[in-house]
Image (cartoon, rainbow, N blue to C red):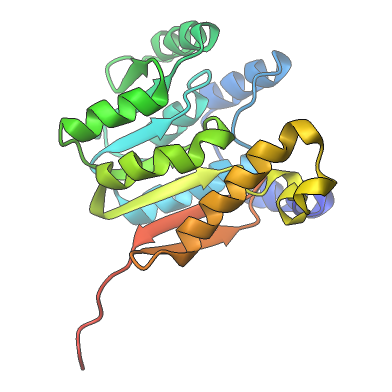
Length: 222
């Protein structure tokens, strides 16, 4: 937990609001130990979508479909949502949830390797106003190039779990050996986002860390 747990609990108690069916879906996912976005991230997504008002959404990492269903509640019924997942069990559960909660006509599940699907979408010339990434953390740097091709000129990229429960500040030798590759790749990813001449990024200590990225806007001469 990046922020002290009692403070997070308090903030959630005054700001977390989701429909009853999503509360049911959240409860089921947690009971089955399926990772879904934390409540603070849920509130952030709701706020950013209200500000951004996207006409199209792409999600990378469907899991059981909770976050895509949440996003569907924050935008108009005519806003398409594409979401990518490759794990068969999660694909089955997501499809079942979309059917159960009447979301199959609004949320389009793209199955397979995210890197390959992102490349295919880029080659098709697809554009999205809002991209939410919550997938394999070690692949974030690889996904970034096609994502930036897919992101519209005024689009927003939101990336979850970028602080790795605070381990991101540690030396690579202070994290367990099995986590060092992911640790290094996440640092690379965050450095790219925050040092690009073309991108503007803020990193927020929300949940397990969120990076919010947009293209830099050129300022007109006064």
